[in-house]
Image (cartoon, rainbow, N blue to C red; front, side):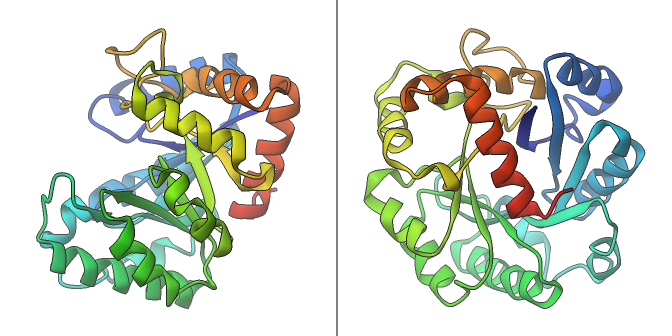
Length: 256
């Protein structure tokens, strides 16, 4: 079994052919996928899609992405109802993005903090989007270190790895692991060091397409290329890695 721990089948690029995307993933051996919400509407769609396609192993997370933080003064009240859906497995993606700064940084921090408290109140793990903001993110997360945390598209390098692991954080890796550039080599260094119990694989589709399809639209089916790249770096077989990822995902998301 392969698992895509972060995908956006609810995105404009994929929602129109969601069934086909899911079937292609299934044909590629991807039997569980987490559809991620980035705002209220997106989160509602993620939860509904996970329910509609539950027999194909779809789950959802709900949250307000840092890009969208400026649109909200507080947690949408409806989240307290949606989170009770049995297919909703996490709060996210939430966090800080100082690369694009689509929302003012102070507003990002406020919404991040509110959503961490929300996750604590409903006893759910969090899916984190942290880009060019590790120092501020770790300062905030230290106060909430009791939460189960997944660093989506981990980009903290070796510099922050020990701190992340010290919080019990999981790290997910995607298509960038297959690319040929300096940043990707740094990712591969992390892969060689990180303990097996702290890793997950993802696509972030329709973004972050792995080689050999880089430049084209990404799909959950392509997570197999991430598995292959990770298995090479850890000098194990894909089948060994898939069992590790399956166990990690079940433990983190409380999946059956």
